[in-house]
Image 1 (cartoon, rainbow, N blue to C red):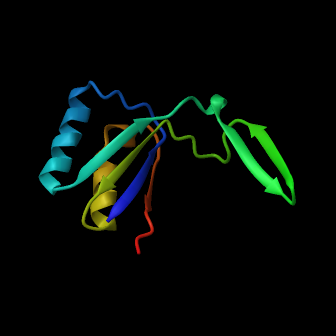
Image 2 (image 1 turned 180 degrees about the vertical axis):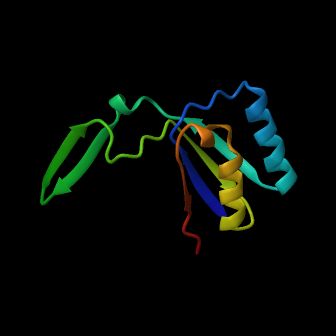
Length: 102
């Protein structure tokens, strides 16, 4: 099953901690795709009310993800364990959200 990890702390990819996390993913048989995000100040929030498009500069909500990881693993418990082992977990929240699968 696929899960999105929204990581709300800096995650330098060139650290021994990050390399250890990648090895743990491999040991669990999980796969990943990771992407850094632009700064929250560069975000635009879009809403449509009736026929009117409304744009607001900046992020929406209190979650401030700096990067995202898409992982493919066995179940939610495994996804939570993977998130908890992420090097950024001690510096900020990580939201774990499942993808809808048909």
